[in-house]
Length: 561
Image (spheres, rainbow, N blue to C red):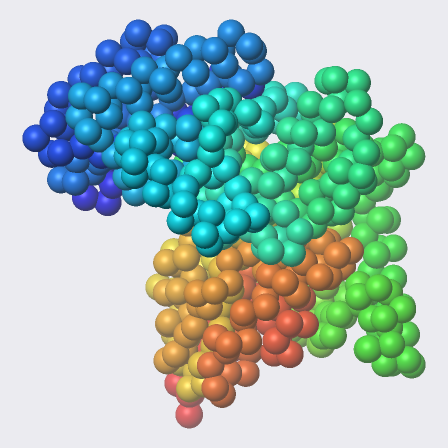
């Protein structure tokens, strides 16, 4: 039943997705007596054929005699507007005179049907409506022209164009502005939603094609459209036609990079070990400064980039076990840079400890500090450098895994998703959440924590479909686990939480209300997300592997008592 209902819900967007670029999707709904429904549908089909709308579809609510129909229309060509005018006139006269239909069933009348309200209700009833409107709104301030409109051509005025804008990311032209994406977006309500980003980009593309200056819109779009886009990709999970607005953002960022920025990115990619060492030094310097001036002062001096609970760099963990099932473990960049309060709690050290406790012999690739999946470069629009780093990592993982003989684990979900996509099954890569659920849980003895724990399903884990696995991991380690229903993307977006911290704050504004009493911490699978979550709640957020480590260590301790 759910699959059938999804087909029903997807019909409207699906038509929009295959329309010609530059055309608009029109949806209308009418109602007739149930006994007339079949004949009405046949007449609608004939009307579509007569006026050349061969792509139109019909659906609705049969038990109510309610019919929806969808077709596409080009409002940029005068002859097409004339065709539309003829169709609307033919449609309304047929429905009213033949079926005594309601020209608007469950949707509002709106400007498209306003010129036909008198036809639908009759001159006498319409005159009464006009009198009532005049009594309550003599100056015409309330929804002017939306229902009561004396202009017989009102539905042909102020038509919204839908210019092609897919030069950098073709799927943008499939967007019908349905808005299904908006609840998933961390910047919705702060700046722009994915739908609004596409609308803004369409207008900028139109101005460029017409030789017009971008004006204030171009300047505002830099912050509202680009800077505050987390490029998390959750919009694509809700979009009926799979548009990822973050891909547009990355493409535009890449187009707008200066030559200097591109060169710096290229240098950073080619000397990644030195770049990361420099970043670790800067992070250490930040902690020294924090000890002197305090967290709040340093945060203010850095424009919010410095966060409370910022992790300290720690040495990379070392594998000691050589006997057991071999598994390749790649410690990702963020985990290598953002450490922990002590070396023993560093992410790489903890992952290796849990793997060895479960009987695995972990292998860390050679020259790991120079390796990167390219995610940080891709988010800046440096696509070539990003793919270069991913290809380097692929070669290193193939070597370490004996050409894929051993499973490969990445400890950050964003990096796992990128490499799964980049490798396209050439090498089997596991996210840490995935491997912990599938391979570690059966091998570990766990003692459940008494206090409740929070878990955060970050965007990449959500896109990979790991909600169930994360829930089951947490449930194996604690009697009470909470996955906040009001939090989707945390808004940290790699470095967005440092550059535009208001995005992270806005995305997590509802989190506090869902923190259970007695909770001492939270768990996720992306280090930068954990920085933002810690700062937002005041509770320490760490990788889910830390929860496994704590509970398996306690189980082992109790077993020896």
